[in-house]
Length: 264
Image (cartoon, rainbow, N blue to C red; front, side, top):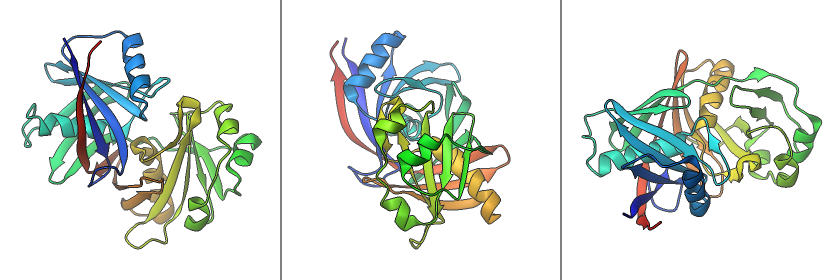
């Protein structure tokens, strides 16, 4: 029987922006090898696999090369599909059981609010190869539980012009690196880009899990608890961030752009 698959542009209010994710709602368990093959075939930052449980959905995320522990944009995509396809009423909470614990989403038309764990960084000195690969002079560097590095640099202008050495980044023992700066663009507090060639994604268009780290970081610097953030990839995407103790509420919009079926 064909397996339906839906492509969603997450952290976007129109098609062909934000970060695309594929969503597979499974009727029966499939093995890890099959899921990894599908994710490689889709060749998106992440492909979701969900299976219904009595109190929600098991949710797993795969890049084209590996399974990951936390993904924001693909969770946003999954929640959008559950509501848009009538599997949940808009007054019902979407509840996901994941490698990073229980994640919940609530509909706030046209936004979706996602309750995620905070993933704060701790100051560390990075390997020199990381800074060389980025080609920037850091103001601050740190690393979090997910093995993501945070690098603050001097300006939005420099950040937008970054051209990292992806081959060098791919050889380093890290999941990804988020580069961030104060925003000079009206309406946004900070700006970022996220590079993860080691897990098959040279530049991720919009990265929810990065904002689980960026939010607490900028909270310490700016002494605020709510932020409007922009991820400055070619596709671009807006993320609203609210710090709530050891949790981070990420808010975004999403658009379903494609429906299909896996025939094998």
